[in-house]
Length: 319
Image (cartoon, rainbow, N blue to C red; front, side, top):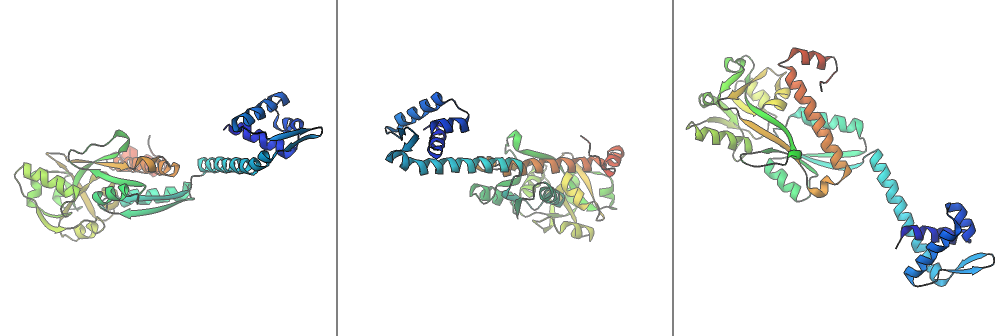
């Protein structure tokens, strides 16, 4: 059924005249009559009795009128809601993040979301990548941040950030102060590592086995929140993603040295189900997360480039 024909039908019924309805609609009366004849043909019933003073509804027309008004009203509400959504996204977004994701990323995302899209309500759930995948599949999450492990493949539009892994320790430690550390050197150090089968632990254990060395895990810790105090207290060293976590630790007397020979890279991805990604709020949140991570990457680069650091201090984020 053509919605335009329904709209013309309602206008004529409310005006009581083809002439007045044609004037209101800005449509030539013959064209209006043709559309109503088409609607009557579609339905197989007459909708109006023509009189000398205008038109009156037939029994079928009187039955159709409230239905048509309801349909057109629903469409108008839908259009208004879509327009509002385009202008000011609103709703609820649930985001899953692993414990090792930088607090700077999460805090930056929350603050920008609150500032730009105050009508979007956030729920953030922390869990391992395995749990986040499960929660996404069950519909508990709209968006998940995960780390790609081993030979897993991700789509290009899912890749958020590639991070080299670094050894984290006290800033004045000679090994840390050197700025780089060979992977084989880790065998001689007391390490604070995530428990198996955490993705980072699986990755470094696999590399250690391939090089016939054994890492000394003196403490297993799945969350990154306590690493700063434990490392700064001299409890051991840890291995963490380079870009984001270094920003969280840089002001705590904790430093990092890039692991080399080999360099270990882990890819952070952002994912969502196709159904969830179709939501405007989900797309908005993903775009904002990419923006936050991109800005933090520039801040990280500033540590090695004084010119960039000066621009950021002045409030300019490089393109």
